[in-house]
Image 1 (cartoon, one colour):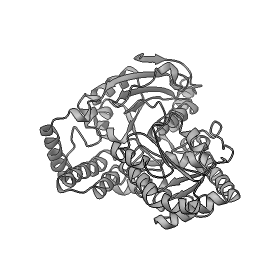
Image 2 (spheres, one colour):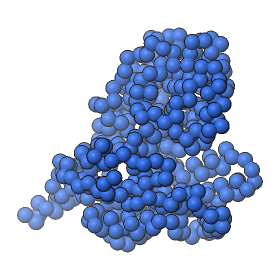
Image 3 (cartoon, one colour):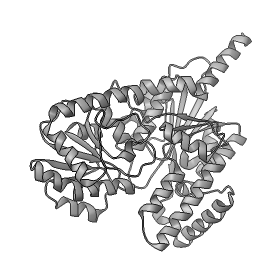
Image 4 (tube, one colour):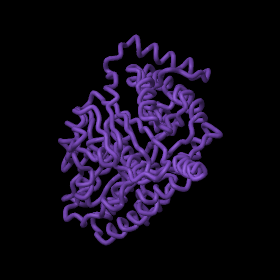
Length: 440
């Protein structure tokens, strides 16, 4: 595939800053929440009239499509490939053990490290220096880093670049949730090492960045408690309200869930639905179908679930929107979350009737019985799904309310407005304009 594209697409204001966005993976096909967030952020930069360059890395799981087959050439000014990351499977046992010990030691003492749990595959290929060189080449004013890369902040700041962390998850809490969901003494020790390292990583580096973008007010409060003094603003997961529109209510009683199953809470949600919830649904609605979409479901789990009555395991789907449009009810029994999941935002954007866990809507303006039905146990979850499958008017009302909430809080226009009022990106552009006026 081409190594780079260069375009001049942004309707830039005079004196607008130059921004380099670093992506840990190519954001197409955009079938995961993280990819959708990356694309939304790039669209926001384009709307703000900012010079937007992208540096992306590639992963071993898949080959990205050609750049010219994506929208990147229309929303970005430059796109370059930073190279492949080091496959996690290729780390030797000795290396992994030494890294875990390093995480424990440095994390416990609060000493900055050169590698961290979620970035090891990038640290190994020298991502820090690749990013630094690209920031210099594009003459960036700001570098936007995924939270896993926040330990590159000092090097970039010393070179004169401001740094924004796009924190889709609170790594301290995410690593703690992984530790809580897995068993086995050896595994627990390794996960504890990851947790200690992530906690130290956020405490050290978030105070040094120019700005932290987080997905909700609840996460903003959490980051402020982890790193007092850090500048944190809410940049919700967002979608374009003009391109994502509600679809007609489907004729078939399809219940759907979508997620990436390498993320343990998503796998647990799918198993909970298939094993505990859906058999109860079938007793009341025998024509119902449960569809589970998304990549990386363990083969053994997928094979077992396929044998269950009226359960369909679809694997990766090319278009999450088409998948959701065919669902009468979107079920979201995710009981551990990092940031605000895009699957929730997309379901709202598409005016879908939802049954959701308390955890997935925590801290959001989503009220039980207004935008969604909020349930916990298997019996209650099944009862809510059955009630919605039987009542088309109730589905329509919940979906309409969810769409209204989406437009107010999660649409691209609403988030653009928030950035214009609170981000240093826009403040610097205004300052540059004032300086230019004086110089004239």
